[in-house]
Length: 418
Image 1 (cartoon, rainbow, N blue to C red):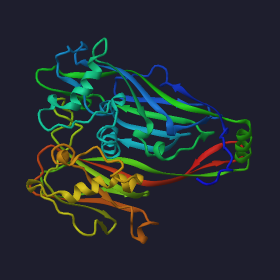
Image 2: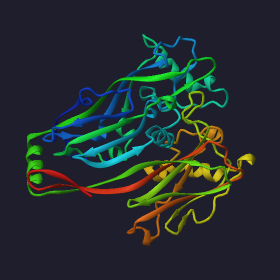
Image 3: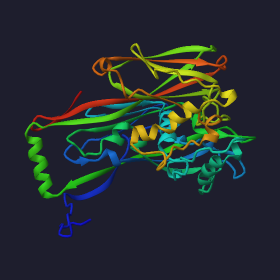
Image 4: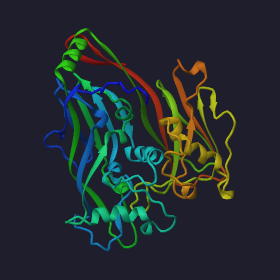
């Protein structure tokens, strides 16, 4: 404030930054079960995945291929287009950087904790259900329907989805990537039932994808910066890469009052687990797969090898509306993960809809005992319920873990080292 003599500093290190489109391999079938793959072969360019995004064009149609009428109560679910895929994978020069199963559920869970309730996300098919009651009277339902049904012809859509909405690597690693081949793989589901919600007499629907384009910023450094970067890479440089990777696991829970879910051995260091339950919502267009059920959880904890988190049990009784401990831990996630206080920016889930629409359970394991920091960690979730789990209940676990790797130059070529 008092340094009146301070000079103006201009950053001229970047000559240009342009989004370039990359499309799937010629002949790709968008609407059959199988892999849709996009490659970026040009390794002699600087690309910025951090600011890249997907453009997905298509149509919401009736199952017989005809179009809905304006009066039909049908639309995509919140975050619906990503429910068309069973897995999305990001690779660099054939090395798997991150692979997300059930990307619709995973990105929906993360988005509910990351975005505010007023987040303007219709451009990416994001408008959460906020109203308790009949689904087709819900504000989120009508916002999504109005966007899709306002098109001519009815049902056409074009969504833009940031890559960091899906991958932790794209969110955390904000530097350019050079000398590596980029690959995105989408595993298309045989059915798009989870992407659609319909009510009343609306006919069964399907999602027809016409095109997927990956828009990636291509950075051209200034001559001075280009010379500096070239010299650095010629000296067998080793670049440290760290990010918080995301994995999603799903389990069909038997009708029991207590269950331990062994998620398996993870070499990465888990930092957060977010658990959500859904009863009778899978593969059914007349239920809303973007919502969750509390299943009368009474106690929930994570076991890393033999260490339990939280150390002191958090108890709840949803019949008596006693779930403040779980709601507070969910509301505090943004501060713990992003360093943003909830008085500045909150999550999308208000207290009045937590029980009925979005009961998510956040388990913070970021502060681990010393012996776990250098060991392979076996992850389990112990769940106790106030009553037997309803039939056809699935549990989803979004696991956020530390991941570290290196981009290594041998003077001519770059490689990925784990």
